[in-house]
Length: 139
Image 1 (cartoon, rainbow, N blue to C red):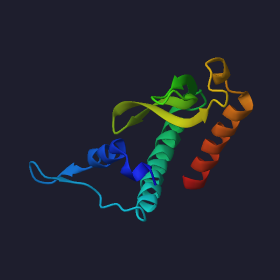
Image 2 (cartoon, rainbow, N blue to C red; image 1 turned 45 degrees about the vertical axis):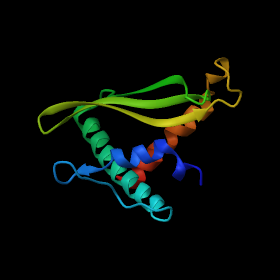
Image 3 (cartoon, one colour; image 1 turned 90 degrees about the horizontal axis):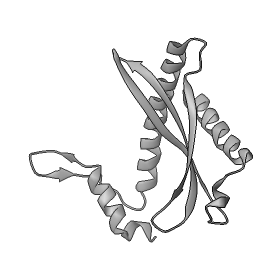
């Protein structure tokens, strides 16, 4: 697979390492076979934490809206255009306020033009529903 030989991918793996002694960096030992399980595990942990934060923000807000959906057209380094979708909310945890901005979708522009980035509402609605279903399943 091309991804495993990519220099940026190797830099990503090095970035997730932790300093064990002063200078030695320990990174997860990942092979092509264990990478998928590692990604699923990390994403599962993210969903649990994200679900907890959303539930807390929902409780703290009472009956007022607590989250807003955001979007923006982006052009990647390879010149492909996408519509990035996200959510933004504030939650109080352990006496401190945290502003959460989380990307929940990345929809590719099929025509790859700036004018085509105005994604149809049906695609946006699908991404939002997938996020809701995922949170309900996990949390």
